[in-house]
Length: 239
Image 1 (tube, rainbow, N blue to C red):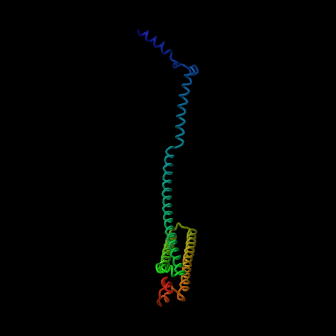
Image 2: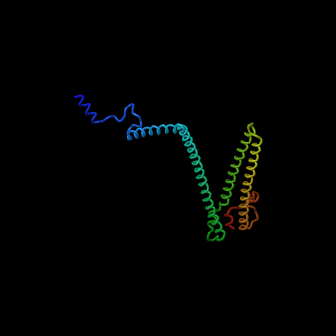
Image 3: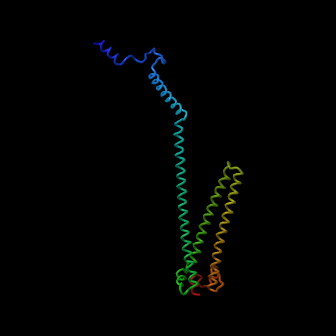
């Protein structure tokens, strides 16, 4: 029975395609192709391993982390810039709204001067407008000058710190002094421009006040104001 089973198995499966002593060239073509595919697959995996080793995958991960950190910093800076832009936009809108309101009041006052009988109420309603307007302008100038003063103090502190540190070269100190001088000149020009604008406004109001009241007094002079009388818009309406 054993011999019959062995013969049946040999008949069923046939002879093995190769043995230990079989040469590669003696193998059937389909077996050769199978071995070649296996060899190509192994060589491909070896090449991938070499490529990964050359690429230094760990360094790529570190670079990716650094890139993420840089992107996060850029995002934070962008958010800060956007918030600053929003604040500036709100401030600009507030200034525009205030300018529009001032223009409307000024038009009403002019209408009151031109036609006191029809628009005389405008003069009474806005009698304190000149004082409020110039007070607001003065406060704005005061805040700007305070900001300029703080900027100058910061420059002075940096300059003092620079002179106390030996690593700063004379060239660096000279450049700092030049920058400070440039800042002083710019601040002085801005201050002069603000003062010139204020003087123009005062001159315009004085001219209007004198034309309507017939008085040659200066509504902004403390001595003239001390002599009595109303220097507001209400007094103009009374004339």
